[in-house]
Image: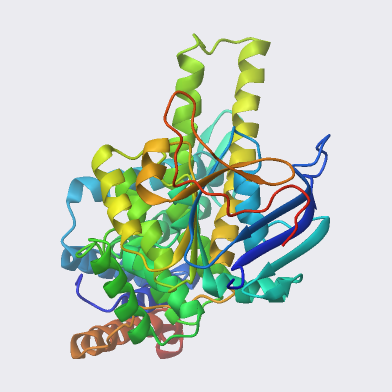
Length: 242
Length: 242
């Protein structure tokens, strides 16, 4: 079996001041080439899980192994962020440059690419997402759907090996949702989507799991529907045996 | 005028602002005012807008007219009961009025015609402290977001029947509104920073924009320097000539 892209071992995490931890002895792993949908009620820790992977939050206990390397310090996570892209829930948090082109080129520039190359990558990424001609648009004047697609472009421009999407469909119309589905289906990298929309997940991922305090439970079927045979058990059971 | 390199325009505006601000004689300042009108004519701005802006500035200066002539020591020219206006006071206030208007007109013609985004990049290019330029750009980017947030909060108050009155409830609600805006801004700043970290930000901004210095910029700068030299001679060399 190939090595997990992400493996969380016995993670304990609690927000400061919270009465009980979000995760206690939490175990999870994502295998290469897999597309997973994360579901669960509000506040169950879906976003927290993504932020732990990106190193925006640090667990109180446990080990995080990403691309086979254990990550602990900020320095380690800086490397992780070069390879893992996170699409934030709110595009206004993600887009901060005045113009679209600058925002999309921001990541490649941080990766040390020359301005000319960064612009080229940015343009290519935008073309791929159907955002040709958006270069000089002002980010805050974009529509909600455009903001979301541009945000995705800013993440993909860094050519990540893994993509994490935090409720990407919030506030999108059907048309933009379909564009997003089309884009995701054509991606050649692994991704994980946090979403409440089963319909969207049905189109984009093969497995779904429900986030709990101890593990991500693979979802056998949904209420009132036929069992989803595509949701296989690929993530760890409680106790975390690999 | 609008095709000129913004760096040149900013430099020239700065030069004249300093010259006019430090000048003490009516001759120099009137010459400066004439010059500012030339810039204004070259910029070809709608006069109505310019006058509206000037009215705002002059409404502040109006208060100077109420106070300064009456409190400045010198020869009394006009008396009303215990109040007395001095000739020196009137002259001094007139000087301030002309100075402010000349400088504001120059800024309107040269700096306000540059889009804020370009302004930030030009300032960065002129080696101004990065922090100041980022402050300008981020303020501009998120001003709209905060305004929107403010509107949403006010709407939320309105739809639940809030009407401002002179009572404790109103003051408390406004205090909550202000506090909520502050907290939300802080949270948003946090999330924006996280999103930047995820895209490999490590404390440095790279600019995509390159400014091109062209012949017309050189001509503009040379003409401006010449005019500046004339102002300088009027102010500081005249006494030695006379």
